Image (tube, rainbow, N blue to C red):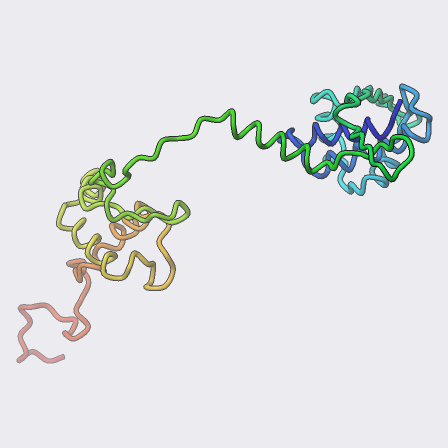
Length: 247
């Protein structure tokens, strides 16, 4: 088994496999090292603690997740032992590319014979990317201004920011909350004037939640007070009290 061709083919697969992350690669290289020490004999017996130490994985859950996924993605065959005194078995599959993909033969006049040079891996990656780009259809440009919906005019363009609601949307929401359109206009005008910020500082993230808070505090925003709440500027007396009576 040519381990150079094997690793070259492995990293070619890694380059196009979006399911893998650095933890998968680190664990596979640790398994490959044990496989190399055992002269590429299948299966090899491994212990979880040793593989975690070699791959620099410090979580048992992460280790088991990665090795199961490498098994599911057909990079190896994992046979767990479920016995703390007996190691699990791993079958590593052989990945080898053809001579044309791995070796680039160059002949020069100043050199005797033939010299083999490995093709830079970045070239293979660029070839794969170019093939992917040519297979994809190029979208035809369209005039976004002509197709832009009038209802979405004036909304925030950044997808991470809240979309500014339209007055009609605010009206419908307030009516659904058993409120009035006048209250909806007050809410819309208030936050439109301050740039849709909570407390004039933080950007609003959910205008429906802000509308619900507005309705809960409608008495404070509208300047109304409960009928049973006395005015602090008036005496706590009945309206028909006679002032000729002693206190």
